[in-house]
Length: 305
Picture 1 (cartoon, one colour):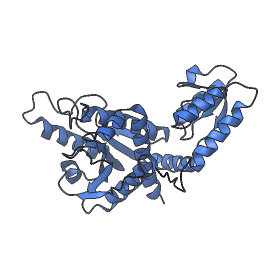
Picture 2 (cartoon, one colour):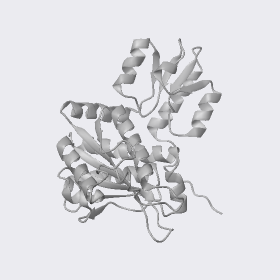
Picture 3 (tube, rainbow, N blue to C red):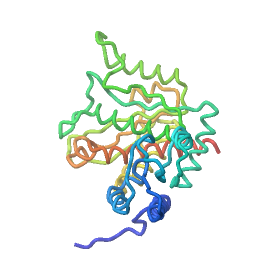
Picture 4 (cartoon, rainbow, N blue to C red):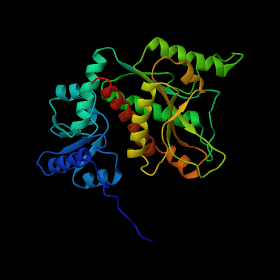
């Protein structure tokens, strides 16, 4: 078997920079901790731990007199404020490119910009049921929560259509699906966001079909641009072998009835054994959510120029 390594294989500049800074900090005389994983790579996290850098999840867990390493994708302003209040010494490994996007998004937020994240299905509506028995509604919600978390770290205001396993319909509604969809659309319109992203999972009769794909409403220039940014990030950060491209659609109810730029992100196929298993793991959900959030930030950045 011949193995060919792509010319672009390896860490990007921001990740390489973060790892180097963390290792340099570990060589000092002051104990170091990282606030969450510096990067999404377990091998690197294990290597940093062997170098003496332990990981904590909350500011309150940071030992006194410790140096705090902030992860490459950055933190929200509330974290910086909490660390400042504790007088903590900070090594900020946030990627400079991400920092620039964070700044632009903060400026956009000050102008009242916000984003709606829609976790598809919920409650009595499980969505698609995976080949592994997973319910689409649960995978959608986990990824949507992560997208919200990542966007809020960039000071983007996020409104969720649902944050628990409940639909937006009444229990005794005569047509629960229609009522649910109408209420999602009403929430989006009332929020008046800069954009909306609806999180879903795909399915197909043939098991071999796989890969994330983003849909936008036919004729929507802004919807297409948003879709292209997210699709590009999903390919780059999740599955470089994915050949799927963004696709226009004029039949999806949510796309047709929503007046703001909106896309539906089908994160993968629950009908594909390998992809279904990955979509149910926290690590893969984090990668997918990170890619979606980066696509959103790119779109917001582009529209601020």
